[in-house]
Image: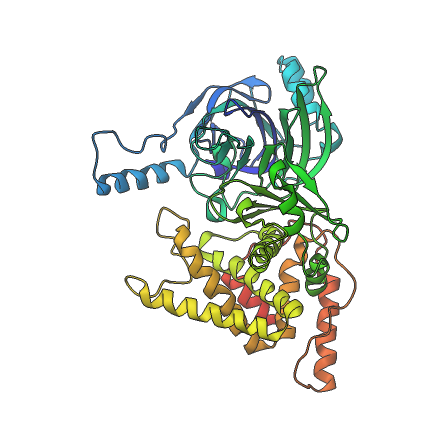
Length: 534
């Protein structure tokens, strides 16, 4: 079972054949056993052809059952049969579709046992040249996160290929309809992780909201291309034949996303921590579209949340025909290049920049994670609530009130026109699909921020600010030691103001400084934090 291990780290080496629509990769999962009687390991893996699996250097037997590759046989043509088989395939895939048998010679030993290395050598468990090359990249970043188990980590190495993927990865190549298209590739997932089209579609991994680990990713791409990935770029190199370029990234959060193509980078003069990428034919539009009315939006949110942005830089990449206009990951957002506009167009600026700002907020708040998809409204609500505050700060109270009224009107129409009554804010966990319908996202984006505004009016804006600071403080590795901006609130007694200031000081002293210590977002966590502050 997957619960028998702690997910410590994953290392991925991925060779991208852009024109051939093919990925060739080596994935290493570093797992800490919780018990010493492990018989098999289950990993999520879809549309991947696995060629070899080793456990601690010993080749292991495996079985791969991609239940969702063909949901029903061709003879079934009715919707009820498809729905029945589809639900069954999802349930069968939840615990993992790649089943790896533990080799008899691999023993689970105590992590303090100093004879582990000697036993490996005596048993002949020596790494091959390919394995040494794959792991040598991370010699400088080889420290594993601490394990709460009493056993030494187990390294599962999986060699695989992905050809002509149908989900999770999109290759955009020239064709008869688009002969001038610039070749590029990007990964994507469904709402809040995606049950069927997430990371499991392009690398063997543990693809659940409850599984968190750090990543080490190496992308090998054609020499003319650039690779962009969520996380921090730690190095790049060109091979001896100057045919391929290697990019190495360190990702210290759960989400992972990668893009490959001949992207052009633009960094505005007043925003050195924000990098913008687009395809060569949209560079002029990119320069215009990223001229924000307030170029210091990063500072605004850092000041309001009293925390540093948890990543060294923020990148936004504009690609062709993504599933949604904006999908955010850790320190990175993938946006639709159709929101870019030229210097002669002015009416699209508010819409385009609103999407970009929401992408930045989502890359920050989304790094906290959610407890389950049932609580996704909290993430959507916090992102929308913070964006509304930014609009009020930059464009004034009238623009802020206008946005609130538009959201109310849209919400009323959706609830009146919904079949079967108004939709529920919290998605039910009883459905095995376990994720949001894309059409349901519009309802969440309209209603969730209004719920937070109702809470704000109940407890006052200053207390709402304190609560959000507590929620996000664990995602920042360097919390500011400065007071938040002064907010306009009704007159209070001096004692009450002193109490609020003391509360803020106490938050600073007790705020964890290490990313990953924060609690995932949930309805109970949000409401209990607000109640405690207020």
